[in-house]
Amino acid sequence: MSNEELDQLRLELDEINQELLTLINKRAKVAQQIGQTKQQQGMNRYDPVRERQMLDQIKNLNDGPFEQSTIEHIFKEIFKASLELQEDDHRKALLVSRKKKPEDTIVELNGEKIGDGNPHFIMGPCAVESYEQVAEVAKAIKAQGLNILRGGAFKPRSSPYDFQGLGLEGLKILRQVGDEYGLAVVSEIVNPADIEVAVNYVDMIQIGARNMQNFELLKAAGQVDKPIFLKRGMSATISEFINAAEYIISQGNGNIILCERGIRTYEKATRNTLDISAVPILKQETHLPVFVDVTHSTGRRDLLLPTAKAAMAIGADGVMAEVHPDPAVALSDSAQQMDIDTFNNFITELKNN
Ligand code: PEP
Ligand code: MN
Image 1: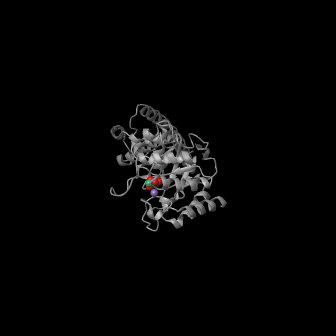
Image 2 (image 1 turned 90 degrees about the horizontal axis):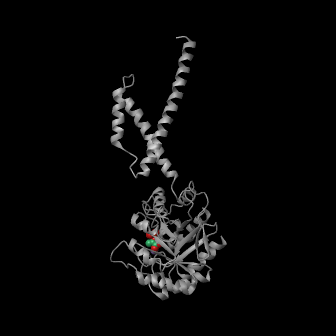
C-alpha cells in the first residue's frame, strides 16, 4: 500500500470518528430526554430489561468483523455513559448544591448570622439533667457573649439502660433557661412525631448522627419553619450526608446547618475520627453553613481546643462543644465535657486565635 493510500484511509477513519462522535452525542441527547421524562413520572432511570432488549437487537444485526462479546462490551459502555449523564443531570439539580445556589446560605439565630464568615459557637451540656445544671452553663455562655445554648432532652444512647434524657420535661427546662438568659436553644429530636411539639420549645432542631438517614425524620424536619442542625452519620459518606440535607430542603426547609462530628474508623485513640477535610468539601459542594462538633468527634477533653482551632482554620462556620458544671457527675459523656473554667479558657483562646 502506498503512502498516499494510507493517508486516504486515515482520512476516512477521521471522518468515521466524526460521524461516530455525532451519533454518540445524538444518542446521548435522546437518552437525556428519556431520563427527564422518567424523572417527571417518578420512574427508575435504570431499566435492565430494556437494556437487554437493545443489546439483543444490536447483536442480531451484527455481522462482524467485531465479535458479539466485543459489540456487547462497547454498547454496554455507551449505555453506562448515558445513564451517568442522566444521573449527573439530576445531581446538578441538588437544591443544597452550590451549582443550584452559588451564594452562602445564612442561618439566623438570635442575632447570629451563621454562615457570614465569622465564627459561631453552640455550647451546652450533653444532656439536660436539671434546671440548675442548665442555668449554670447558660450563665457562663452569656458571660462570654455567646447566644446559643444546646442540651439533649431525647438522648440516643448506645445502651437502653443508660440515661435516656428527660424528654419533653428537658425541652421545657431548656426553653425556660433560654428565655431567662436570652439564648437561642438547640436540642435533638429523634422521633418524627415529636417535631411538631418540639418547635414550641426549641429555636433549632438537631438531627443526630444516629438519625442522619432516618428519612421520615428528615422529611418531617423539612416541613417546619425552624433551622435544622444536621449531624453527619458515623458511617456516612459525604455524598450520603449531602443527600440527607437534600431530604430536608426538598420538603421546603432550606435553613440547614451541616455538622461534621467524626466518623467511625479503625483508630481507637479518639472516640471517632474527625474528618476535617469534610469541612472545605461541604463548603465547596453545598451553600450551607458547616460546623464541627469537637466533643463527639474526639471524645477527649485535651483535644477540644486544638481541633476547634483546626476547624476555624479550615473554614468552618462554627464549633459545637459540650459544657457541664461538673462533668465528673454528668449522666452522659462525662469524659469529654468541659467544666466552666475550661470552657472560659476555650472560648478566650479561640477568640484570640
Ligand atoms: C449530641 O450532639 O448530643 C450527640 C448525641 O451527638 P451525635 O449525634 O453527633 O453523636
Ligand atoms: Mn454528648
